[in-house]
Image 1 (spheres, rainbow, N blue to C red):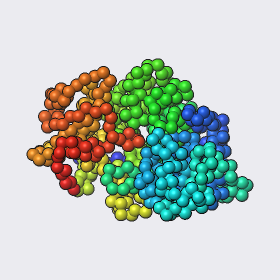
Image 2 (image 1 turned 135 degrees about the vertical axis):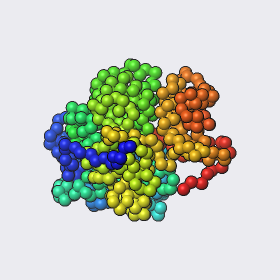
Image 3 (image 1 turned 90 degrees about the vertical axis):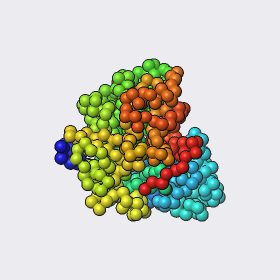
Image 4 (image 1 turned 60 degrees about the vertical axis):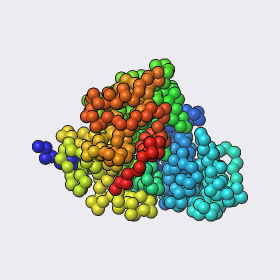
Length: 563
C-alpha cells in the first residue's frame, strides 16, 4: 500500500525574481537592445528591445500626463495588437493596475467589469469581428459623445473618466492612443523615473476576470511578483533563451498570452510574434514559417485546427522546437501529431489557473513522450501542491482528489471580494482549484476532471476525461466533449458531443459499441450528438454547462439539484 502523501514541492536551481515588470523590461532593453522584441504581422510592426522600451515609456509618460496615479485601474478591451503590449508594459512602468477585459464581452459584461474594479481609464479598440466596441460603450455611457476627453461623468460607469481609442480618427469624448503616447513631457518622464524606483514587486499590477460557469466573474488580482516569476519559470521549462522566437496566437487578455507569452519573452530576451488579431490557423502557421518561430502556443482546439488545414503540408514548420499546449484537456492523439508533424519535439504541457498566475505544473522538454502525452508534468519551482479528499485530508499518491496550490504564484485575492477569496484560499494559504487530479510516485500530475464535472451514474463514478481520451483515439473523431445529464433512473447519464474529421462518417451506435468494447459498460455515452462546433470561451475552454443545458432542453429532462 502506498502511504506516500500526494504532496509535491518544486525545487529549482534558479531563485525567484524580485523585481517589477517595468524594471524587467528595462533590463531586457539593456541586455538585448538590438534584438527583435515584438513582431506584429497584421500591423507590419517590427521593434527591437530598445524601440519597445522607448515606445512603452512614451505611453507611460502620456498616462502620467493624463493624471493617472499608481494603483488606478486601467482597462484594456481589444484583440491582440501592438497597442495591447505597449499598454501592458506602460501601465506596469507607471504603477497602474491593468484590467484585462475579454474582447468577446458585450455591454452587460463590460459594465460589470468596469464597475467591479472601478476602472478610471479604458483603452479600447473600435471594433473586432462582430463587436462594435464604441457602439457598446456609447450605449453604456451616452455622455461620452458630449464629454471633454478625460472628463467623462457617466451615470452607469461612475468611476470611468478617460477613454483612449485605438482608432486613428478622432472619436468624440476619447483620447487618441497615439496622441496620449506623444503627450508626456520632461516633467512626466521625471515622474515616471521616480515611480519606477518606488514601485514594489508585491504591488498588485493586473486584474483578470475568471470565466466562471455560475455567478458573476471574479477579478483575480495579481502582483508583479506573481506573474513575472511565472512567466520566467514557464520559459525555463522550455529552455528559453534570447534566441527563441515565440508565436503567440492565444489572446493577450488571458494569462496564456500576456504572462506565459509576453512576460516569458522579456525576461529571456526572446521575440514575441503576434500572427493575427484573433486566432486564425492559416495565419498562425504562416507566421511560424515566415518568422522562423522556434516555439508555438495554443489550446488543443487551435492545434487541431492547424493540423486539419487542407494545405497544412505547405507550411515550413521546421524551425519549431518547443511550445505549450494548455488551457483545457490535451488529447493524447493530438499531442502525438504535434510532435510528429509540427516538428515540436520539445513541446510541453502546462496546467494552471488564472488565480495561480497561471502555471503550477509543466512537463519538461526531456520528459519521455509517454509522460508528456499522459500527464501535465511535474511541479513548477517554488510551488507546492497537495491532493485532498472531500474532508480536506491529503490522499496517498495515486488517489484522486482535489488539487490545491500554494506558493509565490497564488493571487492575493479577488478584487473587492473577501468572501469569495476566503472560499478559494484557505487559512493556510492553499488555493482550492476545483480540479480533480492524481500525483504518481514520481511526482507527475494527471488532471482527471473537475470536481463538479464528475458524473455519478447509478453509484458509479465516471470521469469524462477518461472517455474523451478514448474517443480522441478513434479514427473518425476530431474533437469531443463528454458530460453528464440528469436521469430519473440512474441519477445521471453520460452524453457525448462529437465533431467528426472532414470526410469521416459515424453513427451513434458505432461510437457506443466502440466504447462498450473497450471501456466498462457504464462509461459508454447514452446520448451522442454529432456537432459542427462547441460552445467555448475565447481561450478554447469547452463550456460544458451550455452543452448540458441544451441537452436538458432538447430531451425535456428535469434538472437535478446539486450541492
